[in-house]
Amino acid sequence: MRDSGNGESSLGLRRHPKTKSHHRARKDDPAERPTIEIQDHYEINYRHSYAQDSPFYIGLTEGKLLGSRCRKCGYVYATPRGHCEQCGSETDWMALPIEGSVHTHTTCYYGGESFLKETPFTLILVEFKEVDTLFLSRLIGAKPETVRIGMAVKARFAKKPKFRITDVYFVPK
Image 1 (tube, rainbow, N blue to C red):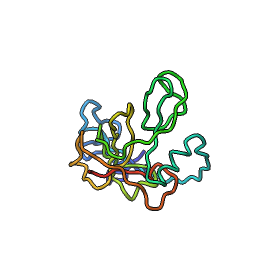
Image 2: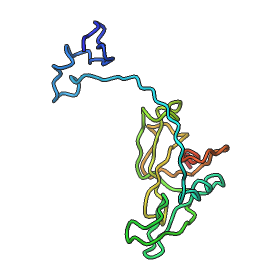
Image 3: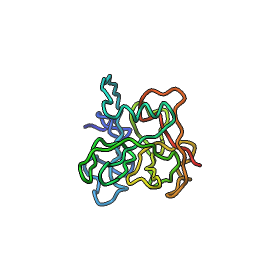
Image 4: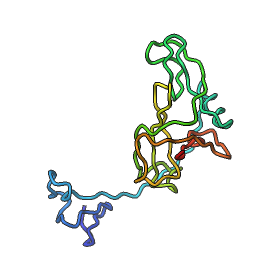
């Protein structure tokens, strides 16, 4: 791992300007740690079936969010389950509200190939009234520094659905 003189090694590792070596950085001081930058290319064709989750994706094409409710204990899942994780009983499909609130959020600076044009992007966990679990989705239309826990959000659906989880996203209400 030789340094080319510009702070970059033959492997593409860039060291922090304050460090003189990739190996001599002080581990207890974050400012002294080397910064790693990598180039990453990936592409994959993947064929699969949504099987028991197919109604969820069909619902997205119809502008609906579908979750599931346990037949026995009544536990409600924002992301569908065939069987209840609480008691093991089968679940039934149910419509979820399309309005909720931000439970927590994060800004992503790196993501899968389909998100590269949107990077950075905000992911949120949406909390719905009378639903026991959270729903992970993108938040569009809000700058990361304006997103707050408890912020009211509303689901939006892709105009040209592709039967993917990205067919639903949330916007500030």
